[in-house]
Image (tube, rainbow, N blue to C red; front, side, top):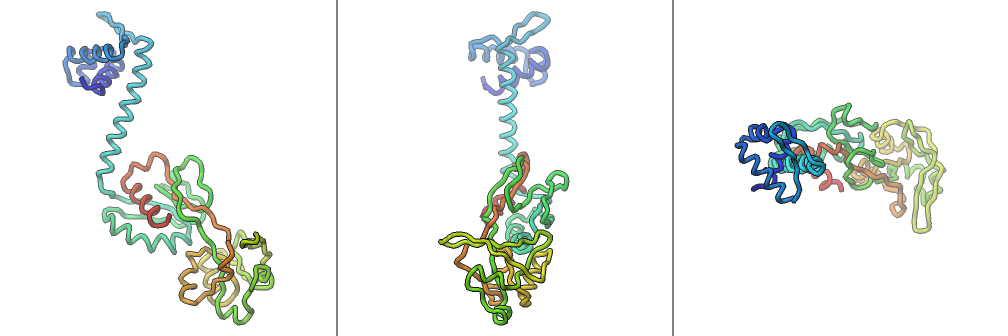
Length: 291
């Protein structure tokens, strides 16, 4: 007899209170239900139920075996559902959260590739630099910069790199800093509200912290980029925000041989959500594109 079917009959017998009730629940005869139980007991070499004409009682081993059977059947059912989901094409609306700069400069240009690949999926993108609560705000996943929160599954993406740049016009007017210490004598554009008083750089000889200051502070990365493009000062911002300007000659990258701090970046989601084909497809797309 099929072992899993015998387990199902046994679990039903325990929960329904009798073999006859289990037989009715499983759509088999009472004789067949009894055969399933005897098959299990012979296989195990242990009695599971003590039965009288009126009542049945679980043996000590039978009670433990009942709990194990329930867990085994639950895992089998979940695996069957997971296998069915894997065969389904991703479809439906997917709500995601991402940091403003990464979402604008990297995620949005990549979305067309994902949507072409999965035409039945639509995407709602929430751009915010705060930590979005996935449950409260109805997001299925988030891209986060920094250490991931506990309780969420995190898949690592490429670290979030920084770059120091200035416009050719600014450098022509104020001169090009040749070593990190020279930054102290320049207009350095800062990000508000968490303006940093020091920039950290490193090279093979070691790391250094350079005190910086400037007359312009802005609370938006894109505005800092525009300020740098118009010659207002030297800027330290994510590489994805300024790489195109550097390649086009609108900005000049400074200290390319020095290392700058990078921050870990992850795509995070709740542990029980990965069975969703649309979520799984988007996570795998992000890892493929940005890891």
